[in-house]
Image (cartoon, rainbow, N blue to C red; front, top):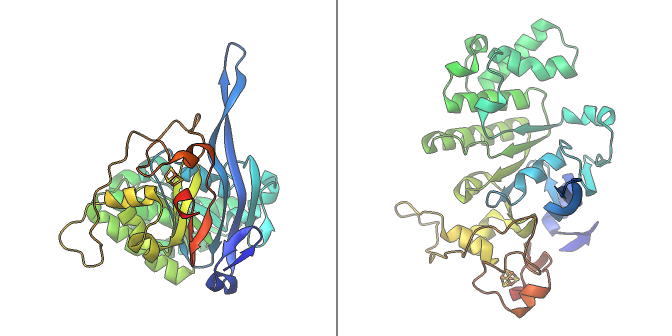
Length: 339
Ligand code: SF4
């Protein structure tokens, strides 16, 4: 393990190519108050996060609702401007580019949203929905666009004739397949998947996850996969980052997260995952009940943000914020228990 551009990287990662490098990313939202609506504070949705995403991998980002994971995804795609920090995509710093400059990069960076109903315009046919990015970004003749749409529909498990239908004619799982086709039509390199299966029935979730894995292999995609459900993250991720109140508290391989979680928050999240039947891969875990709810991100606790819910908190936790450091090989944790 060595330090590279301020981030601890493993020997394996040194020989792999980072597609995206997030460096000290912050996203603060001003809190307005008083008659004059002056800024009276900052909501630190993302607070100084650094990491790499390597070509061809899936980095899962997991945390409760309100932890800042979706904001992080939107900042990485520059759908939101970062308050501070750098986003280096394919070796180019895109963090401060103007909209006009960033347009060529948009084709390589796409997003799949949680709710396919809300993200698909119900007045547009499937063909219009899927070809729209091609119309906006590329000057292709209609015949070529149609060929690409049909090709993509087949890749996501739909039929060529489905292009003439409208979103309401499909089930939730099929609508998410249309969203995936729309995101992939530009042949992106990097896709942010923002809770893409959490609105679907459990029986459909694994079908869509398997489709996403197959597409990743076929098209050489790199995913940042955001979810609140650890069993979904386990299904698809190579590495996992656990996020709490705007910061990563643990980052390691999927195997280490599930076999040897070190941060008390990760341990609590894992203990809450229901184990159905006998799963040999799933270690027996005592249930850890977390005290209270996620604190208000506009007024987080001092020191370690998790201390108000942590069963192991001690004096130091109230005064000093723990940094994400390597505790064992390729396993980064932000907790004073280990330092
Ligand atoms: Fe718990 Fe302290 Fe570790 Fe935070 S630093 S997770 S409060 S033990």
